[in-house]
Image (tube, rainbow, N blue to C red):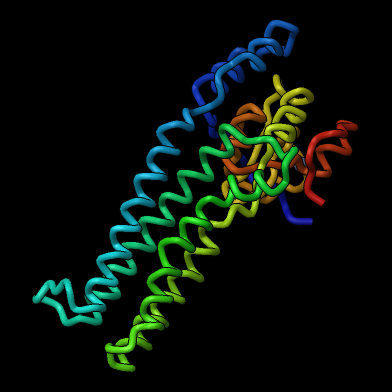
Length: 249
Ligand SMILES: [Zn+2]
């Protein structure tokens, strides 16, 4: 077995740093305080930012279409590079918006009681992506006046954007309010650890899965979920005999 690496600890927040420095022992008061604490971060500006970026993306889609139709011409660039530039701007705006949206959902998750609603809400970025590319693709394909070469390039470029954007906007780690509450009920006052690229959080910083990690971020389970680590490490869960908290398999 490889040697354990010397670890560097990074606090997820000032509160977590203080809790560690004072070696706070979880007691009833602490548990209550953690549960009643405001969610980490504020989801509202993130959601507003996401919607603004998606509107901007829509503007870029319209501009790309106008360039295609010859109604907008920036002169200093030929038509095809102009068209691709607007599609790329469209793509960037949707992806950045989707990241804001996903972050907001990890801070303030919705209920999974209604699965359809849960999926639609979490994947609003994917829906925005469809709205910001499909109309363009359909209008280009059904256009009878443009030459074949321009049509092909415009369609291929938009489809590539749609694929890249789809993967970047989809939430592969959705979290529900039920999942978050279950985790906070069990681990609300505990310090948990996660690595820079890891997908789960751990209750033990000496967990065997962390042997090769140099940097550990620590914080509350709520901070771990906000940081997109929505499941507990299975090894740690078994070690603590924890059940009822989402784990990795
Ligand atoms: Zn672990």
